[in-house]
Length: 356
Ligand code: PMV
Image (cartoon, rainbow, N blue to C red; front, side, top):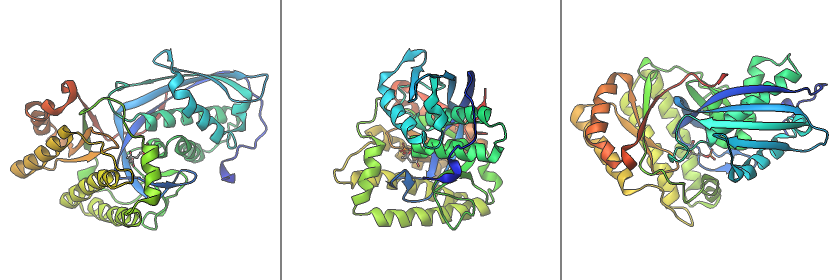
């Protein structure tokens, strides 16, 4: 139990409505593997997006009975499928936010990106919901400090979905204790507080939708398999050394090093899946075709375009804004042919969540 985050002020619940919007994020140094409860095996680093976000509204009122009581609507419709995850989340956070046990909540959520696009929405969804919970906490105790508000929102998000804790932070975010970054923690994400060379301040992320069907293998299961993974320990030390290399790239503006680290991390994530027991593959043949095309394009045009992957078949193209036009031409001429129904989403590094 993390005492710092236990709400213990006196309060009385009225009724109200709170609303937050929170983005998705993309990891450059990947989190893959965890210990109970949601403690990452290695530090990860990501940036939050701008255009892919979840908007969540929570209306609340006092409940006569004690217990978790909510209704959940996604795009205006009930989604019983999400309820077991939400039940689990509320159960976990109720120690830290006991007031939720005395409320009835109506939660209404929607995503800016298509629900079935294969883009993981748990990061934006749990961060938006946690920010709403913290907004309620702030109504019960208006003296909350802003830094505590966001730290606890990140802490709560983590209990919903690990990577969600990084969505609370604008631009680059770090989650997982490391001596390399003084403000890092296993319990919540923090802003990357070291130098970021100008070359990385305007990163674009175009998400190529290779496969929009739901994942055949959950990331929860994938994380679990890392506990007995033959390369588990090596992976943790590789992630740590990649973090130190990306810090070096950020500091000096060494784009070549940045690309090497980002692509190594993406391919290692999938290599871990392919060498788990049981093994599984989330990439599709078009994922590989895109990767090869990116390598050819980079060489031919002396470009800074690189790719990363999430736990799925979709490819994130990462590149500086100065290359936006040439990369868009490349997508339309070549890569769009590898996307399901020609679908892709242009996004970029973002300013983090905000209150609606
Ligand atoms: O937050 P989860 O449990 O869905 O795990 C996500 C892990 C990756 O997206 C594959 C990597 C990361 O760091 O975001």
